[in-house]
Length: 170
Length: 425
Image 1 (cartoon, rainbow over the protein chains, first blue to last red):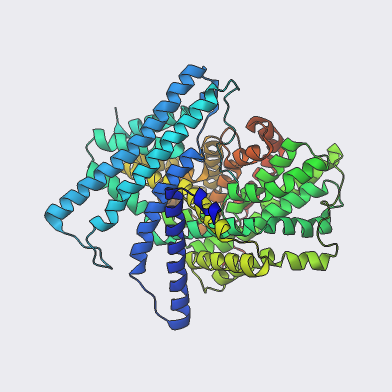
Image 2: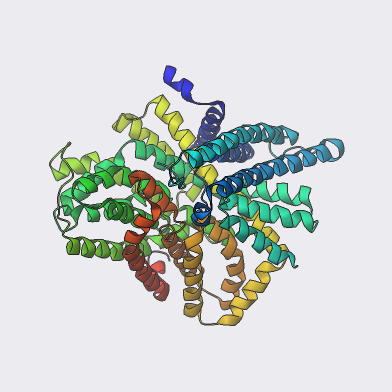
């Protein structure tokens, strides 16, 4: 299975998490209709996995340049200015990720020192669900870095530098 | 300056600079929450996560995954063969086949770009070989893929239902007839253009079967998919999220047992692709959620809503006005961001004017759908342009008459609420 090695860590995480989400949801559907019960506590797991998939996938999406954006004006800027705007755009994106980690960490800190909340269904301390967010953001930032370098390289390769692949790619 | 104005100015400025829509929404909202001390730690984290952690929205990754797996099973090829045997020989046959396949794929996928990719990969090359211009071929697929979010399943209806507390199942069922109406206008436009340009009818190069019955048999995996997805919802058996999970199970079953097209590697690749497409949607949803929260706290939403309510009390005038606004926004934004920007404003308007919510929702989403193929930001156009390696504006020019046809369809849907209510009780 040499071909399986081409998937990177964050891709594996996405695949496994989404597969688990699907499997849990499917078992619940079967359970509800065939046996008349549902495992309500699984919703907590599924929804937290969903958050991780979104953060990781958004990162990969940066490198694959799938995030919708309006480039008509950007394309008309002089090349050097365009490079600056692209860097600014990535810095803002990275800044949002960092703000997210910061406010999450703040909430975790308040919680472990003050409230000691446990998750409603599985009774886990809430930081268990929040901690992986840091890892997801770290992996996403790595993808953003590569996405930015790729986009800047496209600018400098002498072509018209116009991006045609801004939409979702097949 | 008023925080509401700041919110809007920062967002519009960043958007104009080419910052991704999700990031523009997020930075504007976080910036305003920060500088007006609306409670960074509580508000930002709460809103971001709460927007994602919604059980109804789980239908999105599942529908996306089912679509990705069925695309890999080359089901679009098989549908193309069936339609091409039926109508391939008329004028503009392949273009008509393309529109029909894209409409049908809309009943499998709930996203415009996903349909553009699935159908475009199969048909655009074949259309070029049959003498169609590449931009026209790409435009025809991109525009008919608009209907993917009107014909159920539809990511737009899932989010709209969630935002307005309207039943997603009812919206799904309601979208069927209006989707067909818009599709009809699109077919007519494609046919007339092909006729004038002398695009002859032809069949897709034969590789497979020649009898219609066998082609139908080979495509049955695709033809059954909407029956299972929509049948379950229509019969009231499944919620949309459950139907989406069942669709994934069905797609894996069909790919493994029936078409033997899914390897383990292919499955992992599908999961990654679905994750990225879902993340692209949900990244916007999450930041847009914070943006609309900030918009309502700062009074932006109230003031625009009361202005709208004051403008007219005729329901048809209101719906057409909203449609024009959505079409205009559709030129510079993607459907999901528009939804988060506009729907919170519309909720009080719908209540105040006592508008029929299903009809209003279907008309609203139909207008959003058209925006996927209008320049400069048309998510379907981007995807189609990537497939043929032509600049977006060249394809956009070819898309104009088809967009016009869709707008006629939109007006029909807006003026005849019975079309949206035909299949719902």
